[in-house]
Image 1: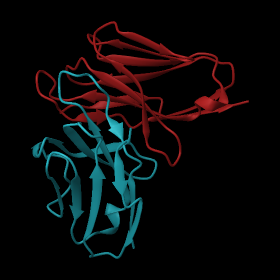
Image 2 (image 1 turned 180 degrees about the vertical axis):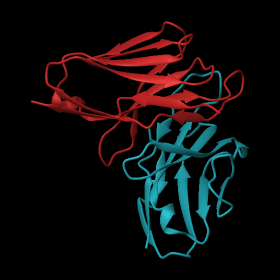
Image 3 (image 1 turned 90 degrees about the vertical axis):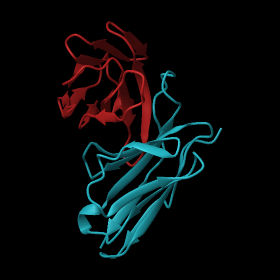
Length: 114
Length: 115
């Protein structure tokens, strides 16, 4: 059974600070997604990471994937209030030629304070 | 273009009643997914469709839950004899078939409240 664990689950940051959210998963997969969810809204895709060593950056967010360690990180640089949201990582299950379902972590609720 | 559309956006029902939730995926998307999100929780996988078939129904919590997809497009999630623990936001998502590494595109969800 594929398990996806995120930590921390809650994160309170000051504006301007840096921090990293971690996503560990339990079985082999080489496709990992990061999503953002604002309160009362649906999920918005941030990054798709497709291979070992993949790194993607968008603004103050940078995501990386280490398939050998089964670990992805989402790094926040110089946080601003607009980044306050819940961030989910998700890992594809049954990958290898057939589309499988996406297993989500519990999410990290990020609050950026002035 | 239009995104994933779900209806109704909100549904309040009495315990024991049946409900139907509808999802219109993005045109051309062959894969369709249903997830459930309880208040303050992560996403719980329910079922996914590839075309009209459902290769994985393992997430359906009980036999009161069923889903179908017709014409490779619209999907309906049906919950029979609703219980209070069914209260949640039901999210639908779609994407292109395997080999195209597209992320899931989510609808805005149906908020179900069972009283």
